[in-house]
Image (cartoon, rainbow, N blue to C red):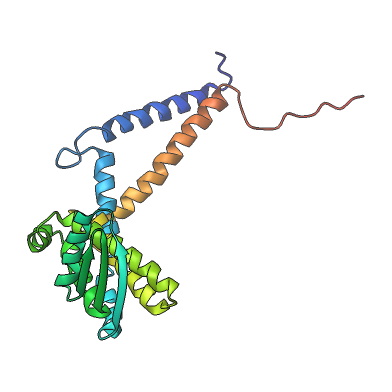
Length: 237
């Protein structure tokens, strides 16, 4: 190996070694509660994501105009057992449900029914899953899954029947409430404004650390006389 530019090569070595020393430190479980740097960052960004995804109150507000709006629909679950469990969700929400095998025929007040799903999602969002499992008699995440499956089929049915407004509110309940509650369950919500210093540092560090490695490679290659410059074309005399 021929070193053509010693100064650049030495600088590249220093940047490379310091990069990997810091990387080693990042993987040590020294960032609180036995977490390494990646686990700590992942947990923090999940908390921030949850803190910025609390749309349930606005969906509850949007759903108010559907209180008193009656609906009937049929949905099919994967198994008769799922159908029985899902029927309980709608019954407690105030709807009338007929179970035939894995199929449910549901009728009731759309706004009140969706409000039942929204209230369950709000409880789950605040990590109070025991209340949900205690109410329905089975795992709280399975409850959210059954709500999601049922609402997905209701949304498709309403779309086919050209009930656009109804399909939209069902979609909002599913995506902005049920999905958020399920995906972020047991994660503490954190507002960005409450962690603005740490958030800024983590994002700045990520960008800086990436650039750090880029310069390390750049100086190493330059030290070895390698570059991305286009070779000059020799003109024929």
